[in-house]
Structures are given as C-alpha cells and as structure tokens.
Length: 288
Image (cartoon, rainbow, N blue to C red; front, side, top):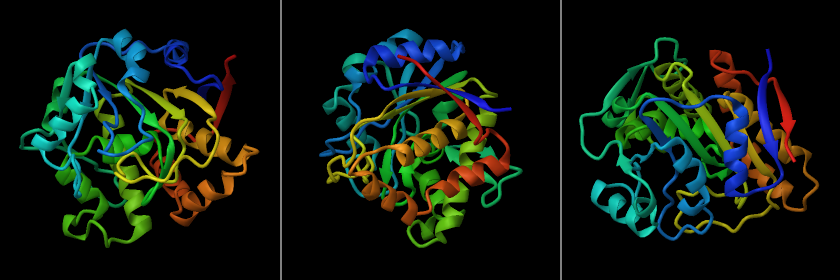
C-alpha cells in the first residue's frame, strides 16, 4: 500500500503547519522534536524562526545530539553554546539528548549491518517524535533527509561513530561505503520501532546545497527551492524528494545529482525499504 506524502511548492512556516495537520496524526504525550541545530558558520540550515509555528503547535521539546567529528557541536559545552548562539533556546525548551551518558542502547534484531543503535539516554523521556529535516546534499550520505535524521541525527556522539564505522567506531571514516548506508537504514528502523509509529516527518526542500548543515564551510545552494513535504512514512518522503529533484527543470540539478549519485545515496532508501518499515511507493498529494 502506497504512503501519502503531502506536498506544497509554497515554502513558509505556516505551510509547514498546514501540511502537518493534513497528515492526520497529532503527536501525543511528551513530544521530542528533532532538528539540525546547524554547525557554526553554516549559512544554509533552517533557523528556529522558520520552525516556530509547528513547534509551538505540538508543544514539544526541541532535541539534538552531539557530533562525532571536529567542530562546534562535538562536546556538550560547545554544542550548548552554539544552540544559544543560534537562538534555539530563546524560543523553545531544548534538550541535548546525549549531554551526559550513559547512552540508551536499542536492539536491532533484524539489522543487516548493525544489531545495536546508541542514542542519547534522554530519548527515553519522550512518547512521540517530530522529525524536522532540511533536504539537501551530503558529503557522505549523498543526500540528507528523514532517514538521516532518524539515524545519524538521533544517535549519540558514540552512536554516530558506530553507524559510520558499521559497528566499529574506530573505522568512522574508513568503513565500506554501502555498508555505512545500510547501517543508517538499520539505525533509522530502530527509532521507528522505538516510537511504534508515533512519528511525523517534515522535509523542506530549500537552500539545497550539495553540502550538509553539519559543514562549517558549505557550498551555496545550487538549485532553486522546490517545496515542503510531510508524511508518516520516512522512506516515502525521502523517495519523493529524490523524485522531485530528478523531475526538476533546473540548471543546478546535475550538480546536486552528481553528489547524490556519486555517494549512491538512494541505497539508504533501498536498504530501509528492504527492512520493511516504510514504502518507496507513495501518492504525492499536492496542496496549493
């Protein structure tokens, strides 16, 4: 059965909230809202002001995790300072999920590459999850969207290295590439299972650089903005974004596709679909 993906070419904070409501799932209990806080110096990440209407609506807590590489977000002290600098905690309650250990260890019994996922222990305080993703290219994953937010995004600092290294954190930058993509799919599935379907996904296709928001020096966007997508299916929403890029008539499209294809980015979607927690088949419902 194909998933529903709501889509609007209008990009505004108000449209994000409108599409969220159309998806038909009101997140309940204590809601974790996963954002990308933006690396220091990055010019492309989506600011807290953009997300404010939907975050205010669900009345949740904005969450992030520390990184596993050099920068201004790889320690709790530095990351909290950057969160304040970028204005997140001026608007919302903010929880750095892995601010202190030990990590929460999730089993992945059906994982193809990894059987464990290590996430910030504070994830245990939440009943549902809102995944707010900025769709763009990525230096390693090819692209970044809902599946990357679920996997690398929710993983603790150690967990990020564990996924990248395909279960061997010391191989964070040297593991087999397709195995890393499959590890992301494994980890994302563990979060879907953990929240038992109580998740809504938002992908915003704007400021589409070949680089991720984790890059302090990111290339400027290479394509015109495309729109907002909302779904209850993380695989369908990422597949829809890729399809919209391929369908675009934009002079920057080949540059973004070169990044995606050179990293075999679609393989994360393929691996996730093989695990069965979503579908690559979807119905795109365009909202004016």
